[in-house]
Length: 472
Image (cartoon, rainbow, N blue to C red; front, side, top):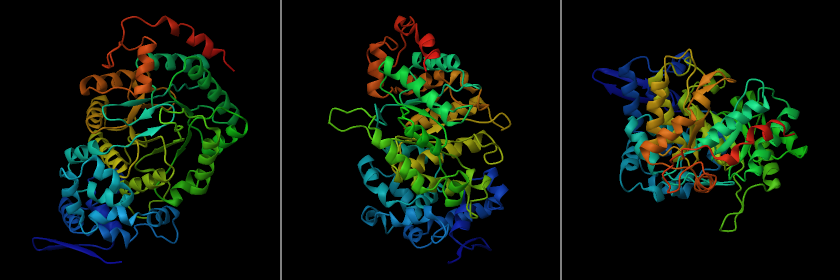
């Protein structure tokens, strides 16, 4: 491994390897200081960024930041790299890549063709040279569409995950939150529950309850219980109506091992979900076949002592290679959930959210964001309003929707149903087309494609609470 150098004035800065160079070039965040990999001064950070700008992109195919021999994520990244897709930019430096991405030549078609030729480390590297507005501009040009019962990721659309969590998994409480969300136009990405009681019988119970609601009201959406993938596999074996398989993932083999998973297990789960054929058949005759839902977050590798001396943003980007391999319907970064040890304040959370969205979209993922913070972070809802607005401008695929933005089960602050309406109103965005048509048909939205609520509560929803509360 070669050392990397850059001189500022009379001072020569040396970076021992590629992982160190990337870490020192990262915008400041508390997790990198905790790991001992952050730049030790603003000057060192600038020197690292200047050295990184001069680095050939091809270098990332020659030097792995996590050893190939001991990490299956590295092997996945390098073994699946598409050299033909990479060829048009193979002669660029990281700085030259930044300039190209910001040019008009890098349109949606070009970026889509390029994505199989990019490694996560390339996207992480170029993000470190970008201002927030650069991240937004490039992200907005990336188009990634997925389908199950609706079409996610079309231009001019912003989808939401309806998150009806309850601290005791009470059926009536979940139903109330579900009804609340539907009446505000939330839920086109997924109706997804984090179970308070995480065992297979409870998972099956919740899946049946959600399936009953979706079936009774013919909602063009999908359900998910965010349990461990092994629980979902057992639920499928018991005949449960599984739409999407959920799993938290990380950017190293050791991180994923700490989650109790590996690539083979994810492949098994995807095959099991596909075998159920629960996706809708669309007008082109194809069945919706994106059956995976992944969540990620900067800092998860460090918290598992599985970061291999890398900065948290680079390792986060590597998680997107895992997600990309399994063709998911949805991926999101739970950006501020792990806490201030990793992202200290609103400024760091905002920057991380934009980075995560940029890297994932550039790699070809249907990327959303849980725009959130914990109550002991130096952040508040105004910071989340800023990130929500910026991500909406950047073309974020989906956000979370929960009553009052306060998750009473997981005890953190996220975005509400009202927040989604705000973003759709000010940015002229709409739900997924199939879900939008359903909202208009059910009398939730006024017709005309403006995502405007009707004044009166639709009478046809009157029995939702009772029916759901007593369903098996």
